[in-house]
Length: 422
Ligand code: EPU
Image (cartoon, rainbow, N blue to C red; front, top):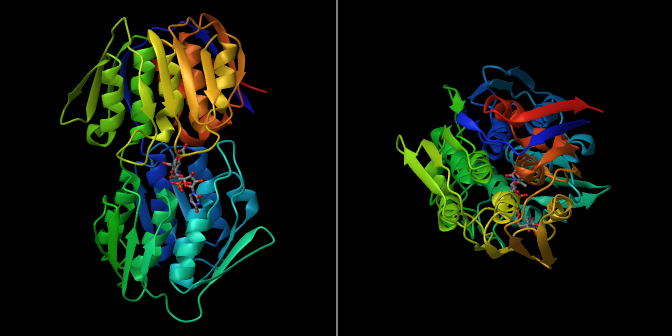
């Protein structure tokens, strides 16, 4: 298990390129199950979650090729086993994305229940209920979801009780080839859901309303893509880089962004007083250092609201703002695990239920800290960069699940970080 040793405080400068989106790459890779022919992807980020996804696909019988340096993955989707085992799904909850394509294509799937994780219970009951409404028999036994269909998948109207990103994605796969019309109400509008929907449309699917709360799908046979599918840039990585530039008060140029997908995040940073220029049609963000930040009240919400995946990073940044900020976590029940670690560095944060109150500004002092989940690890690295002295962030494998070589990119910008294996 690797740790990062960070010598701070850091001043960074230069240009950094955002990698392909994790949460877009994973549903696109699972979509290959829907086809018989080889499917090729570009701009695949080099992450543990991609490794786990390919392992899962291999265990199902698929052939995989991954040019890690070139960011290209090809999948030969010859599924011989419709099982997604616990050993892989426990490493990555997105393994639940095997469920929709397996049921849609093979009428049968056995996918491990993902179980809890550091950010809360994270059930998958909405996925299961929606499949049942489509005529799928779903039984949960011995820790597995066994979904099977005797006749045909029949389109119907599905109302999600809460917005669910992977739930909407699972139903996009199924609705795309079900018989008749599927209407998803209270569908997720996240850009990653739209990217999957647009990919399916490019394969012949008839989908309208992508990016809105009502998505209508007219089932039809799909045709395998003939050209490589390009994974869009990671809006959360881009937002993380902006927060790093702001916290370290560094001038950074962040390329490979899509600013249109970052409206709520950029608005929040600007409300704090940040100066961020959008250039090249919003594909590059230039962060100009400022001295003072204002406090903020922020609530996480489904897209286009402020993303829960940026909560830990802005919470850390708000420790530098002059006054009292409040951060409300509305998506996950237990996503403040990073607070106890930030407190070890000197943060003044109090958590009551799903509300964190931050008093600033504080000066962080380096200490040993531990990463608990993916976005928490990013905020701890950020905190290490602004701490005086040495910060050791252990259990950094969480970071490697979702950020392509963040420490290497940081070192190229001038950070003093050493990775140590333990
Ligand atoms: N929920 C249920 N039942 C369900 C599904 C969801 O109660 O069947 C609840 C969840 O417990 C949560 C809320 O609904 O309180 C929203 O969960 P959602 O299903 O949207 O989350 P997800 O699909 O499991 C994806 C991302 C997460 C991101 C969330 C929210 C992927 C692979 N994962 O998770 O990304 O935080 O949407 O935007 O797309 C990350 O990248 O670090 C990460 C955790």
